[in-house]
Image 1 (tube, rainbow, N blue to C red):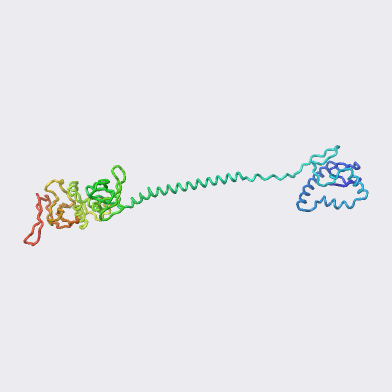
Image 2 (cartoon, helix red, strand yellow; image 1 turned 30 degrees about the vertical axis):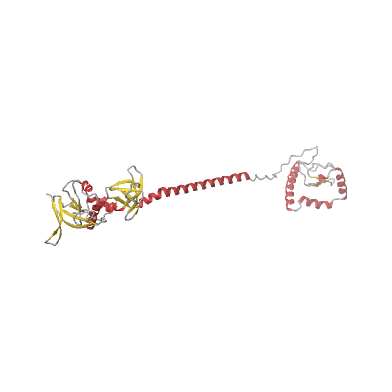
Length: 388
């Protein structure tokens, strides 16, 4: 900033302690410091004014003061221009670059202005690394979803679904002493035999018709086997447990071995609301509707299979041309001890028919049975001989 010397009226820098023209002392130290501060503030304000396009107050002051110079001052200013460089008259001079008089070193000016801090790098490598990590995480999640989906489908299709089907499939039981599990719907051959199933084998049944049933069984070694069995040799759960309750001893089960005779007994018990001896909880689990009482509990007791006489009798009497023998059996009331004789014959398709039922003596076994014509009744009569 340029100021006028009060003595010679020459224009002098406000940073000079004395006038270079007349030697007049211009500022004391306090004024110099104030001048430094003012100069610093003016520099900051001039920079702001430049950015806004308005002239600084110093420039306005110079523009106002210049017209009132005296002729003497103007001539002296011209001399000064020839002596001192023009740079001294520039109002915006960096104090650190200004040449000072060797007589006095002005104090160092500390500016509160700080240069703008350069912005940090754009972070492109970091963003690229972050993007790469996000892509990797997405790929890992996608692979995890695919693996879980494939594993879940495999578990559902190979574990859960088969177990669900097995749980919901109906249970049937083999009622013959032995039935053959086959790999195909073909009987009378050996090539398709899978296993021989004993009496009472539980069968997980998927399909059943009049001839064949598609089943699964648990083999003795724990493996599950699938195949086909003949439908006439299996029973549903209520019928099997009802039929099993009819056998009073193991000999009766081994003596009445044909399925047609067992079906004949089962149908008779179902038609008459009879039941054998069975545990109450087992009866409930098997869904048998008949409740046992003193009048409807009947069973079959026999001697060993080859013993004669016995509680069973097989002979072709009703239809001598039939391919099946007739079946006679004594049943006993488990409570009262009352006994009955039942006599069945069979059609060619093994369908049983009850020919007659009659009271039997409280003791004894069947020795012989005849089916003769009775002249008094004009019909055939069944005559039974018992041993006492």
